[in-house]
Amino acid sequence: MRARQLKTKWAERIDSEHVLAEYPRPLLQRESYVNLNGYWDYGITREGEKLKSYDGRILVPFSPEAWLSGVRRQLKPRESLWYHRTLPEEIFAVTEGRWLLHFGAVDQYAVVSVNGKVVKRHLGGYLPFSVDVTDFLQVGKNELTVQVRDYSDTFYYSRGKQKLKRGGMFYTAQSGIWQTVWMEKVPDTYIKELTVTPLYDESAFLVKVKMVETRLPSGSLVNQGAWESGSKVAVTISSKDTQPFQIEGHAGQDIRIPISDMRSWSPENPFLYDIEVTAGRDHAKSYAAMRKISVEKDGGGIPRIFLNNQPYFQCGVLDQGYWPEGLYTPPCDEAMVYDIRAMKELGFNMIRKHVKLEPQRWYYHCDRIGMLVWQDMVNGGRRYQSWYVTYLATAMEYFHLRMQDSMLGLLGRRDERGRRQFVSELRETIHILYNHPSVVTWVIFNEGWGQFHGEAVTQIAREADKSRLIDQASGWFDQGGGDVRSIHDYFFPLHIKAEKRVTALTEFGGYSLSIQGHHMYRKVYGYRIYRKKSELTRGYRQWIEREILPNIEKGLSAIVYTQLSDVEEETNGILTYDREVLKLKAGTVRGLNEKMKQRMLF
Image 1 (cartoon, rainbow, N blue to C red):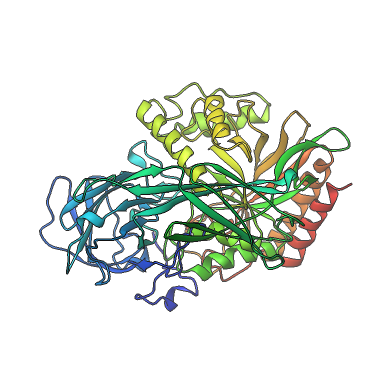
Image 2 (image 1 turned 180 degrees about the vertical axis):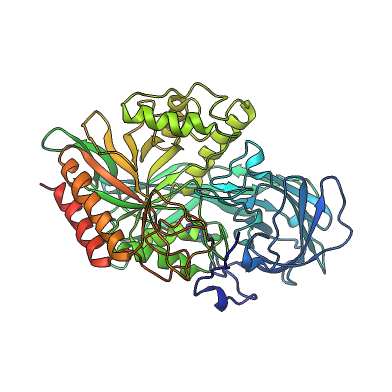
């Protein structure tokens, strides 16, 4: 039963005419930008029914289940959610240039129409997608419609921790448009993608520019573009400390750019280089950083995580990315920055983003503020058998017995199409986030949720990105691959033994303290219940001192505390759900984080 609707301090400041108005794609930024957030018409129909009239207005990009949307209604699996709006007057049919329509994320299946004609179908609730709508526009008024279906946890599609019957460690399911919708105008031949790889040991960047040349006749159905190779491009690198340095090359080919007096990127010094790319009539801005993440042996022969060729202990927090008024969608840019800075001020240098992808700007803020990111893939699959993936797996982990991930039925992964969809989304996730220097580790599976063929999927991820670490199976169902031996320990003494891979405690804590007036539900969920801030802080300190600090010398190289903030019933956050109360004593947390970092430098 809902006790109260919590809101953060940013909720009441939202201007419906300027909702999440910042440029949504900082890694490839143009001057052309039309934000389509704001009030849209919406309607909900039963499966198979046509929409006769709209039910009201919804504030995009907040899901209908979110308080900020103004709808506050759960979309059910056998229903369709319809969106409609008229495009701004500046968007109309043109004889030169192209209009691109972008969606940050729509959960789960979207059918996009312009002036009554379908221009795009997209499956997957967490990844961005785009479409060239130029040939569907007309002079005068243009109508945009989006139909959405969301099966939530009743099907094998990726869903994270969403659940129609929320409770405990699973949260309110949300649906529909939940990230920024926007448009931009580009030349007929334009920059589609920019890939930047830092060659840290060579003091150079490797840059590849992909371009699209529109060739098909007007009126052709998507796709209207084809990859263009060989076009001349100019790449300029600069920074606040250096003069611009330009190298010319060709689209589709690697362009090597040496960097003199190279400066490294780290949480302590998040130094970014500015990049500008010019190709024909198109011009875009981006950024990059000189950062290397690797596994090396320390002086005692123990595998450690190295950042920029130096051993680096990672003190992290688990982040679900939920907001009381917006669910998956943060109320504003400032709110995202607050979470990252609050953790950094406590001495944490890493955030594990848990089974969710964030808007591109969240990663941009991690890049510029200086926060390492372990990025989970979003879990999916049919219903998991809790006795197998939780209780038996926990017991087997305690006795150091390895669980196999070949029992696909028990892991909810019998559907071959579902497995293929996961692999496709894994590749796309790596592709979308590849240029962000803050992202240093891919976490493929979590606690067996929808896990399958761990070794094979790990190799797929490795082929997609050889520059980052891979945590194959966070918690249990470890198949022995990847770069990380990943342990979850909420209840037992911690015993670390060095092996060939890095050892990381990727979840611990879960200590619960419910603060009167700052929690949503009467029911409280957590792994250990405390009544006072001082007691919670003492329990936290004792576990760090007893279990973590002695094990660092034995090989422990990274830790992840559960968690950044409360979420609904789960009151085990460092911050309350409304971000109003810091529940641990700041000085204690900072001091312990510093001890852990220094202990690995023994």
